[in-house]
Length: 300
Image 1 (cartoon, rainbow, N blue to C red):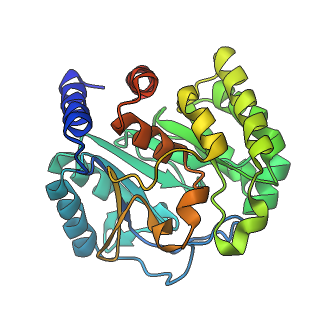
Image 2 (cartoon, helix red, strand yellow):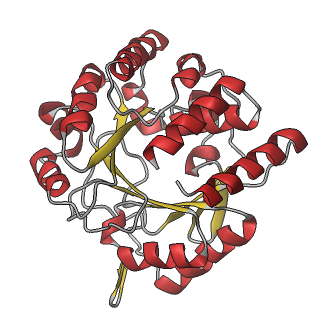
């Protein structure tokens, strides 16, 4: 991370904590909800299957920037399906950088070639070992690992949603992140139980066991892009929600924190590690602050 970027984020954090401000710093643009997969744990794919046009996406990027967002995510659906004429996802990432966003990340299922060196991080969904991943996402594991091997840069972060199907493979994904070329780290979430996927949610005891494994992997030197200090809050769902410093824009509609905020009661069962990390950070949790500084400086 550049020193100038670090200084801007530090200034934002100090102002937010001291003045209890709710200005967003992290924003996500949903470029499409169209997806080439039908994953068992996903509730937001192919609802409209619309690929939003370039000018709309460009306007939404500008809207987020004007709101104060400086960490930008492009998300889907499947982001690599996005195109408008000759423009592709890569053009959006380049334009976001030129617009002034300090960190630009992309979320993908990894089934398309990963020729995106301009992105700071490509968060790529890997949901277990081959057997469990394929049980959730279809026969895609080998394709994904081949695309990772042939990626244009070492800016990939595995992104695992832990649920009832794959909870026993947390260690496998950690080891894959440690040993796979072009992978910088691994990041975890717990399954957030939308009404149609409630059976995949973990119990408190299961979350605790998974966090113990992740913490052990951290001690063994596995590059984990999460904050151990947040684990107790994630296990108990005791972190404050929603996260006002994070926003999502989809087809012109801005949502605080995420798309799931509109589902009654779902915030109380949130499994997103970053929500816990950011809400605790901006509440002034000292352990979170120091661990986030160390982690972000290491992996971004």
